[in-house]
Length: 137
Ligand SMILES: Cc1cc2nc3c(=O)[nH]c(=O)nc-3n(C[C@H](O)[C@H](O)[C@H](O)COP(=O)(O)O)c2cc1C
Image (cartoon, rainbow, N blue to C red; front, side, top):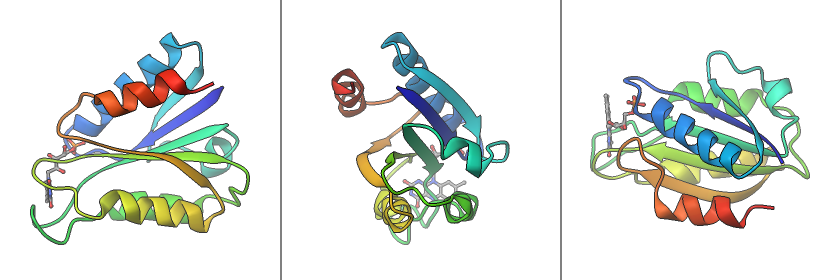
């Protein structure tokens, strides 16, 4: 499968999570591109069979959590994703709130089928992601 992982990061945690996800995908035999959101070209990453979008959680730690503006703007710039699979992920410290569902809804609004939502309390992908990756064909 051809996979694109696009992430926003401020201090590197989400970048490390994205790289680790990419490494796992490659070890499982997939082709994977990991790109900082500022360098990803919407039209190009939309071509992937699975588009993964990641953000760090921004908010007031226990309330008002959301993805970064840059993440939502990027999703807005994606073309029609009808028939495409997407996955969302975020890194956070205390509580992710509705960060993932906001990203998922925006991608669904573009026509994508969101097949996974993962939140990591740090830079390591969790067991849920590992199970998802292992089941991917
Ligand atoms: C301004 C700011 C707001 C944050 N708000 C939240 C929050 O509402 N909930 C939370 O769990 N973590 C919050 N965090 C923590 C980050 O989401 C977390 O440390 C994340 O892993 C950072 O990712 P990065 O290293 O890729 O930038 C906040 C961090 C900053 C700098």
